[in-house]
Image 1 (cartoon, rainbow, N blue to C red):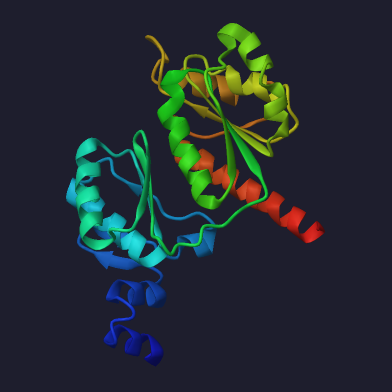
Image 2 (cartoon, rainbow, N blue to C red):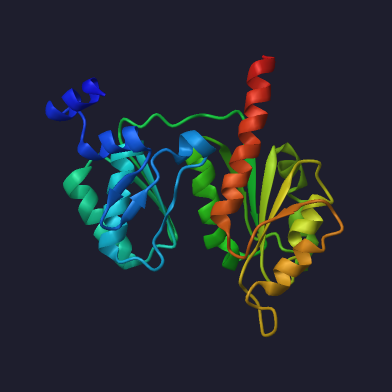
Length: 255
């Protein structure tokens, strides 16, 4: 502990970094950031922008960068992004920012991103499923997976999907996002022998169009697959990461 205190006194370690090392989390006005979650669980804490002010999001993201080397932000709006961009210019000007729709990954220049020997296929039934797929994709990118994005292959025209079967079979795990009746994950799982994670999307018309029909359809799948909650791209990406990490570990130990 003395070395840590001396580092803070010398300006080599910020108080936030010291608190994260001592407690595993950092307490600030916007809340508590779980800086140790990645070490403890294998998945970093993501900052849910929805329901937070732009200032709160910017503050938490800066803390994440300072203590873990990167910040994952989900469900952000343009006002959140503007506040975060301004804060990063002031505090971490060399951070790299990858924004995909409502999801953002900011990475410090000295952050050492892992590289997993595994590929995840991220599949969408239609364009409307893109934002949920983006959320899953950035979680996988942060973990060091190779991402193969396969878009707009819904079951209304099966030839679009059949054309991509070899790519799907080459992946180690697949995340499949679909709204409406949610049939695509079932079809994909019937064609490949790798784990499939279905993500119901809140799109469609009338009754069940809020993702309930898609969720029910995936839960009743006659082919084996895992299912996450409606629009839960982060959870799907996290689950795919854990699977891929196990695959990478097996390949590495066997080589």
